[in-house]
Image (cartoon, rainbow, N blue to C red; front, side, top):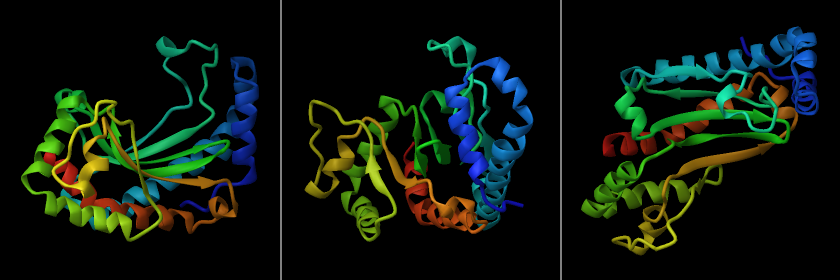
Length: 220
């Protein structure tokens, strides 16, 4: 059961950033497990359990990141991450992964945390299908825009095309011109992270985002 992160969690993330080598990590593996990996795993499992129980028809799975970087992609000599994240998503085939994975996520790093919904490496064809659906019924998508505008937890983020793509309506323009996107909330390191109730914050956020998930998933 998730009981909250601790100051030791934050200290470990800073320490691994400043001591990113095998000698230090091997000497502090127990701290990594007890202070960082275990509470992140417990948080992910608790959030996943609530979301999967509330939306069993989605058939979500839960993934937890590793502390070890992919050695093939290490260019700075730092083989360990100073952050961890988990995701809640549908299992995907290689073909689906090539189009980008639609996922809920939570990420914790030394400076803060973030969570939300977005595509992992969305392809041009994926976003083209989304634009085609917006073209076919812009009013339907504008209802989701109104829902997003009614709150201040999540903001639209994502790289835009330099050459502007013209949306069917002014209201859909910001979305229409995205190469990819995320609906994201950035949080600071605070006592909120140290509370067991933090899991409910994430669950509530994912539930709010579920209509967006359904729309994007059906647009793929």
